[in-house]
Image (cartoon, rainbow, N blue to C red; front, side, top):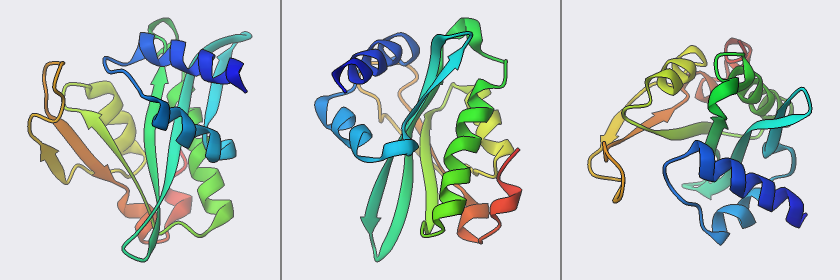
Length: 154
């Protein structure tokens, strides 16, 4: 288990401009298959990490991170990771909605998320304290909320 946390931490340090605390990794350990590494030719090239939130009488899936090392981008790895998560959500069938956040300047991620039915509904100004641009976008999936799971997988 510790090896997985160390691998995830190393990937996150390289992929993302922010650091993740112990609670992040505790949450990752609790979601089972909703946290997964992506491999390319036996190399850990990326990961997806989610958290299940229960609020407002809803079961919500928060996609905390989807990331891929730079040399492995544009190879469909992000698409496979999102499909993996969405397929689990469809099989489980008990999530009321799915949402994620993304840094405002991450245009390739925003494009990917839009292909999966996620829509920008809010910009959180000055969310990030130590990186520029500091703004963050909030993207819930409208398709999952409407029960149109078949439209989510790409």
